[in-house]
Length: 337
Image (cartoon, rainbow, N blue to C red):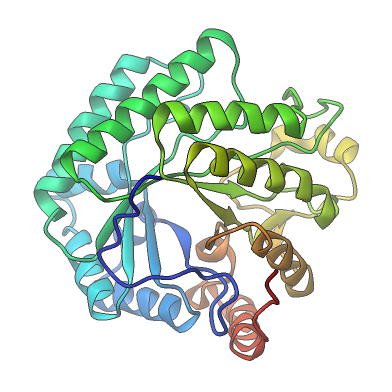
């Protein structure tokens, strides 16, 4: 079993009263271009108030580039110091090129990761709250030479992180597909093959944490229980490979009645999470998603908070946030065993 690398007291989020999500994916670039110190501190305070104890900071390349060009003040020291003050961990994303999955240059990806990892450690490596790394190469499956190249990339990044920052865990957040007919353009993989592939990836790369996205293709039409076989497969892969299994319970979704309906309009959609079809996952549905994920997961994180329900997004987002906080603070921890 690989070491967790905790530099702050953490503990599992699952089964604890007052906490559901450890943290939320935070795409920093658009915020820090306009935010001041007070804005960033308010955002962190809102996350802490919601029970989060992990700042999951993404888009490192797109923040550091304007910092190094002198266009914006470096936000990372502010974030790291505030996280330390509040007893929170910080996870920083490594390099990932835009649309990396389209004819990737694997050696360039490795080289740019080496550069960015070194820059991050030079600038922030001594901050006590800097807890771990996030590798943003998200996929569900790969075959043949593509699979070999993908595993080689993850192995390279994890080895570099382990060498330069020993003890800091490295997290990956893949997804699974529920579209059995391939209407959305992807090859469906059954849970058995999903488990085999990710067991192999985790063993070869020694990635520490697999935080499995629970959405399928972000579609509201899928039943919550349809996710169970893939959560089981992901947990079994982690158990076999000696990795830690987390759940990424998404709180944003596309409101559609069925896959066929969605397949006709998907090319018109913005997958950055904006547009009329995107919405906050209804809270009662979220409770069911959380309950399922908690059966398997050491901790839970989410995508969708910063996009849809952090209080600074407006009145409707604040109402959802307050309802979530009220639920979390008053719910009974789930029974174990």
